[in-house]
Amino acid sequence: MNSSTQEKKRWTITERLDIDQAPNEWFLSKDLFGNNMIDVYDFEPANYNYFLDRVTSLADLIKGLQELSPLADDALSAAEKMNERDFQLFKASLTKERTHEIGSAFPKRFYPLIMPKKFISATIIAEKYEVCLGVALIQLAKIEQQKNPG
Image 1: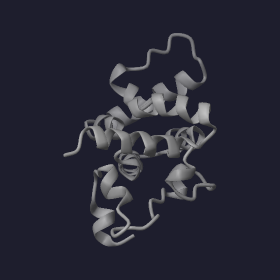
Image 2 (image 1 turned 90 degrees about the vertical axis):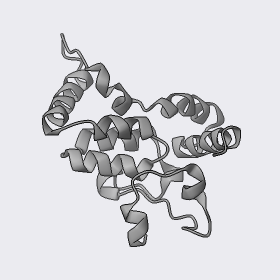
Image 3 (image 1 turned 60 degrees about the vertical axis):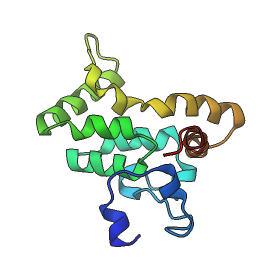
């Protein structure tokens, strides 16, 4: 990945898939998304859960969501509005939610981080057609781009 690719914070699906720019090079950080990650086409819900569970800083949360752009831009927007205190609250709330602790009240402003909007329909499609979540997300993004060019 060249330096201009690393500096970019948000992408369109057309930019991500532009063969002249980066042929088949949409890789996600192994440190953030798990040791078995190869590229975004292999992305699964378990990789996203791994990311949320193990991310240790707001900067890394934002970095990981930038790597997923444009597939989780609502989550990226939510993370960009956070400060360090919000990040700590998010992590504590996530732990309580995952352990089903009684009385856990997950702040609504963090909902997009738990399940980015595009993941909802893509998860259903991925299960129905027995493909990876990443494949379903990319196909939905392509369809959305065709419906709303520009």
